[in-house]
Length: 102
Image 1 (cartoon, rainbow, N blue to C red):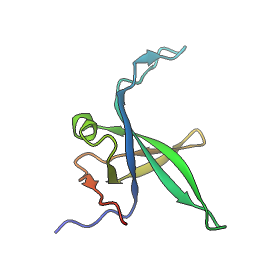
Image 2: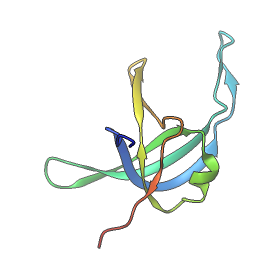
Image 3: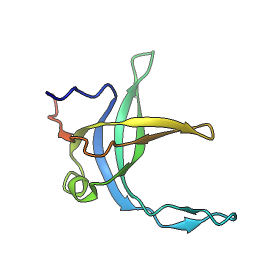
């Protein structure tokens, strides 16, 4: 039996793209990964909702391409690098298409 993920992001897939490769001034390469952008609501203390988009690295861009415009729930991991919170989809994660509630 698989343990459900502790952290996940739920929202609508709005874009899938491949980040271009580049090189820093020090010669270190960056980029070249497939990315998915998910738009979702963040509840605020006053009861309103703020919409926010998260960009995640993925090893399954074709799967997400078929889900553009659909609500999904995605397990995520995260880390802080140079003061920035970075999210990622763990390899082999199960992406669930969500049903919209009435």
